[in-house]
Length: 492
Image (cartoon, rainbow, N blue to C red; front, top):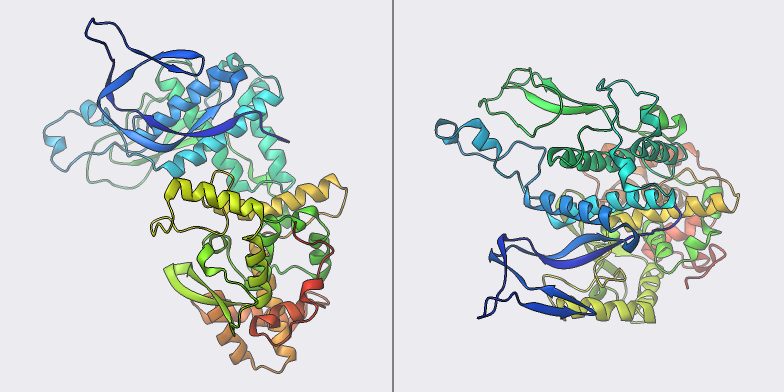
């Protein structure tokens, strides 16, 4: 999808119990003015308020938005859940199975709801882009074979969207896991709509498949799903559907190599010629990985108070990060990277976003420290924003008819470690010394993982590394020249 037709609005909503319209002393329903419209005043006997609840909005598609938003609310409260409903150990001796299964499922957190909303938004934008009406969603196929796809099914919007996602996976613009996650959330929406009677059948096959695992209880998860449940009631059951991204969509050369995937010098040059690399935010994401080996989740952890003026008399610079396996680390970084981070926090864009963050969370709030990377809503950026930087580079290269980039964001970290190792080998460091430094820098738990970087560097399989030597050795302030001259763009 080239652009978004809809948007997600984060609102404070009350989805409490037993709603009623407020009346005045003469028993007239009170109304309040909101813009040019009057709305009846609604209150609840029991409030259930959520802040920053994501709601889909598109004036041209209000029907779909209303349905999607009601679905999101039911997912948040647990009114609709695909997991076994909660019950206590003694419930089976008191209540019927029907009563137990009528209970709400587990609630989902706001972050999970936001991710579901984003996936539904992709579907909605695709429908708008292809001028598909909401009524077409209700088309009904008759096949329930989880391993077959009827010819008529392929004409339905949800199957055309499945093909769209499959093509994105094949072209490496979307991961196989992401494509299936989007489809899973769309399937769950259809199940919700089927359960409440808005549709009379599903546009994909669905069966409960029993897994041979004995349970201590005999309660069943009954959600009025199509098909009978004839398996042993003590078995664990999973939904099996034919609406998935096919495995053959994963190109052979895109399957992850268990070894290392460092960028070659040619691939780095290709990456550095893009506008995304020059972007003030996406480009800095990439440099955080190349100059310090940061993981995506570590990049968004950086707080503003840790970014200091590199012109100070500090001998070294570091960041406090919660790394893999929840290890708190003060990671030493190069003066070059600190300079990039410092400059990022000085421009007008950042200062405006800082203002929005402080309006929401206050100044010096220990529960919500001021991040370095803030989105346009004044909130800390997500990990997905970091990893998407490489997807954006791929899209740009494709649009410009240039060579395809095969590497991922995480491969930037492998690139940092590999070139860093090469540089230290050339300086005469022993493998054991390099291994110790790598384990510290990359927060590895085992020697075996670190040894792979050394082996890979010794094999010389990445070609000429050129100026990358200066990048990686710069971490110890041993070489400072050439670093700022890499690439053809400056941050804007």
